[in-house]
Length: 160
Image 1 (cartoon, one colour):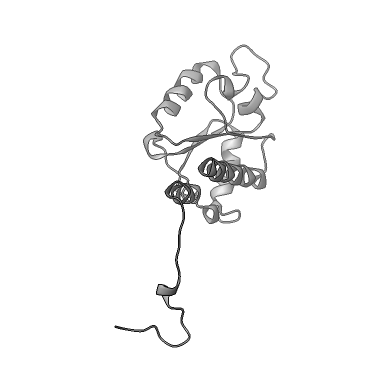
Image 2 (cartoon, helix red, strand yellow):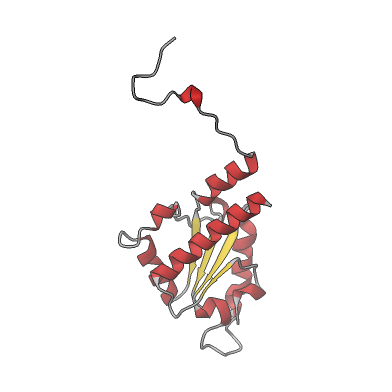
């Protein structure tokens, strides 16, 4: 039987226990695959978040996917006009469970300054929203905070 080198911890001394549900939530929390549904200036701001200055990869959310079947986090960034509503709903429905949604910016959240018949006055009338990020456009720091709020939601759901 081999022994560990002097000064290194013996792995047989440690016991790691957890619930399977919490372990899976830990993995999901640190491996989000966002699907950006960007239609306006908020989408440009989201590009800054995935860039090297703000580096969203440190949160585990850098694997941006453009297929709903490969994504678990939809980030709706920008104005959603009424003609886009069924498309947004269809894409959301194609995402596998578990899935989360971030409404990024004033336009996605409440229609912004577009008070017109053709603009959706909030995507929560079309799909369920987990986190709202205010701003026109929101700062990259606000987007990062929104992603960490999604991570908190995932952790809390595992403990309940």
